[in-house]
Image 1: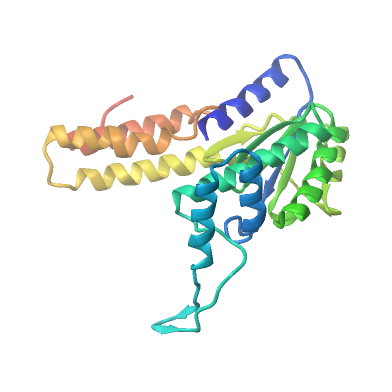
Image 2: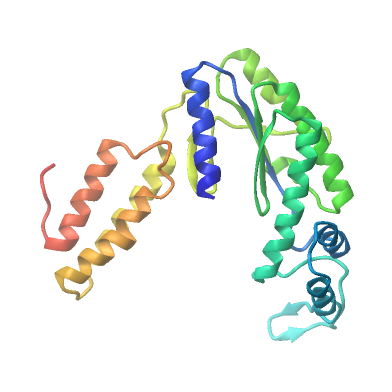
Length: 273
């Protein structure tokens, strides 16, 4: 996820420096693990050179897998399913990555200049030309239908790195299977807050600072020695504010109030900045 965050941040910075337009769409996949068609995943794995023994073992595992609906302490009848892979199983990440790689290859063939990112159920595409992005969206719709999965247009989004009217018009025209995508001026992707079109808000970072300050206050109440408190302040308090701040750091005011909260937690007193 850090690679994806840095790649997008560099693309945004490059567009600002060289005054290029940049368009991007993010795609939300409906029930990513539950919707996977195992025959397609295992077939793709075989075509890519996966060991037949591994595929046979996975097939036997899922052939014997049963599901059941639970309500309170009551269980319904057990039943078999033809779709879905187990979320939390390490091998499931392999199959999700196989499908993600196949999607990237499909986009590269249809729209070679479009840059893609994929992390499990989060997919995104960006390019300097809106027509290329729309081509990638159309390809995504065809790919998902063939793969047996579905994207949710209403939970997906689109943006351009300029608030100019022509750019906003292109962004509003982006659609997936005929359904318009939500136009966004800022977004949080994989934990990182991004600002589009020159906005200067820091709402996500402010929320994270609030969380860090609250953690510092809880730390101050614990019956721990100075060394242990310093350890937890560095590992569990300060990290709440710095996570996801690669592109837009906290404001000076937010950094100052967290500093005061940490000093008070460690020494039982406030400090002057």
